[in-house]
Image 1 (cartoon, one colour):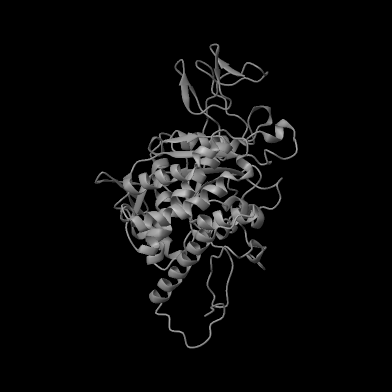
Image 2: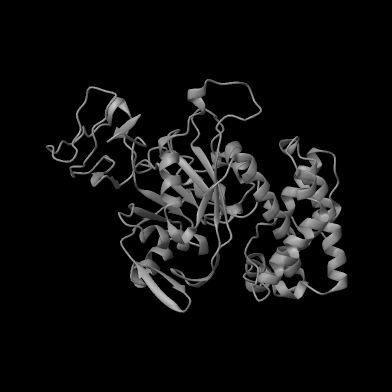
Length: 454
């Protein structure tokens, strides 16, 4: 236990003061002298008020602990990615931030638009700069010479024949804000820079991403990075490539995910300890006022995710099929009947999940009537919004439907539950997206096309 004047201090401590004395963490790869309080339970001496400055060894901290790298990497330049980068840059003693961009034209736009991120809140624009930018591309070339992002591809296909390429510096703190369907290829570009001491924060819509990452990117449970799951209710929509409008304030929920299954074999307690990078990343996010972040247990996070999936599984695909704003789904008897059919399947699947067995009030929390109230409430609060799925379809882009309604269908199949309504809606959204993409690309079929059936 670290103490100062009889008061306990978390080791290692964040920047701050106790009784007027400054405390600062030491970080590697710097030439700065840092202040540390005196630790009572070992024989080492650290500088405190009235003492001589002493710089800790560059290679580590007392008792052999590795230094915590402060740099935060963000992959995904969408709405939430811009909100996160802008919010973190506003912190006192802000961490170094590197934006990982996946296309060369984004680098050119970054330079052209002033090398900063603009966030507009209540009509007031604020631009923050000082970011580092890095281009990262999965090295996977198709016959046309382009890089494709597909959830059906395996990471082993990437970087074939390019083992000698320097992957770059290690990444200890990574935040992923890409669309769920692009996660595999986004991570494949930096997977060689992540270690078992790294932490990845997934801040995305949908469910099933982590399981897919474990299967295709990090199959070894001992060497895979640590995971933090997050969901946010902030409303953000784009203005330009590096400008966004913060339309609605919300909250952010975070949860550390155990490396070992909670219901699996017993492992030594030390192996369940959270990585230092995980604790640092959580502290950094939760001390960012704009994000209003709160930590939850793994089980509570799963229930929060399932509630959001249930809401998105109704609003997103139905707005796509009716090509309407969220509020247009309300006060329509036929649409309400459709909602209830979908929600009955979702409720049955969620209440049957083995992960939630024995948890109090699950049956009531995920009852069809309560889920319907959540959907109606959300649609009412966002009645003028265009859902992100509808925006993607209008632009001919792949949607997250496989991680929303598709997740419900796949989990239902595992338990022998047929979710025919959700399966039908999933296929209809995919079909409409394909139609929109063909219109945008001026698609003209000249004959039978592989993979397309009548």
